[in-house]
Length: 406
Image 1: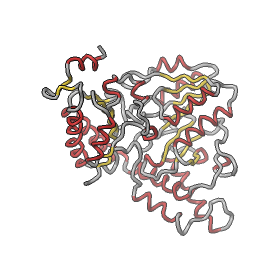
Image 2: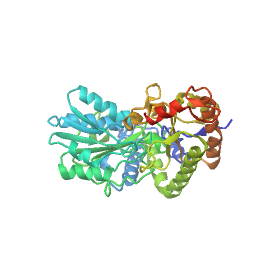
Image 3: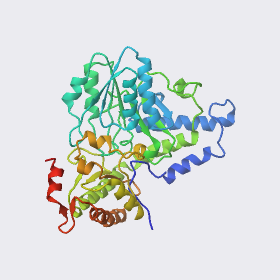
Image 4: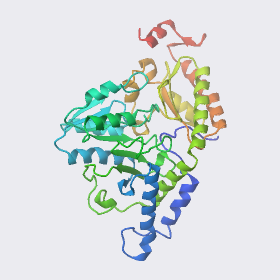
């Protein structure tokens, strides 16, 4: 049975071009880039070239503003905790109720340690109200940490405008954005549209680089303290011997994303739209979470009323289809997604949500197979549901009232 991989927001396959770029630094050029002898020079130069490539990927920023990390989670932890340590007089942080756990849980930890954190609500489409954001800004606000696009629904936040408003209100308030799901999908022009963003994080394994490498953009002059200490690497900002093969892989992935971005994006969007419209046509009582909002082109988060997402994922897996119910970082939890709860998804559907996310290696045949299997999986599970009228393929009358919240 052929595997249909529809979970690219969780991770992506390493591109062949990326593997080829990494290979020399596992073998012939294995040397420590901090060593002084000549044979270490290729490793040292590889990091320099990678920093240049990632700087171009982010709109032509200064390469010295790029900090290599192990992942986006480390990058975000570094930005948040590092900013708090460097700015002890500021005791207020703004974020959203739908952030990835790498921000959401850190902000809850900051609140436990005595900072005040404002978790901004979202509407049913998963979007922020600008007035609510403006009203949350205070004289003691240290940072606004707002994701560029949501990892579960793909809803895009107006980070350009939010960052501009922040700086116009008070230039000393820091603005951090988690670009993990937009890197390689949307423009990350930190010298142009995103010029008011101070800190930006993303991870290699979401852009066809390997797991274990990420980056943090730190605009020159941004006050943060190192999160990892004990060495001089990364300009003294992140101790530890650099992971040269993976850094080289991240750079090649960034270059690859730029080389064919428009063609790949258009193809992925077409596949996603065909998959989404096909599921809506074939399955009654479903809804797309975030529909009507601006979304990244690869993501479809669909809620199916009156059945459990866990059952759907199990049966999809049995048919060789890989999908998820939300963030892979919380996949061990049986609790409904905090993102969907914050969006007000009805309780009849919040447990029945599945995220389908496509990538550069998906095909029309993958979509055809998903459209064949998914409706049958839903039908199988609804036959077991006490809320569903199987004879007429619709909710029972009392279930319709539950679905409407009556």
